[in-house]
Image: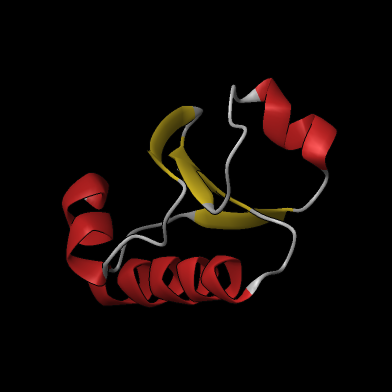
Length: 76
């Protein structure tokens, strides 16, 4: 599983990355968490508002940091 956390490094983007990493650890899944800060790379996902999270190429949330509960649901 590959999880992309997209954002330039704003507070919400940092929170999104932290939440995703905590949820991955809690769920015990084998996942690579990749931080994407380049806007051209982010746009390739069709994302134009950050933070955003994609799992295996599927965008799950745009424009807000997800809750840990949301991320855990996506990991199942």
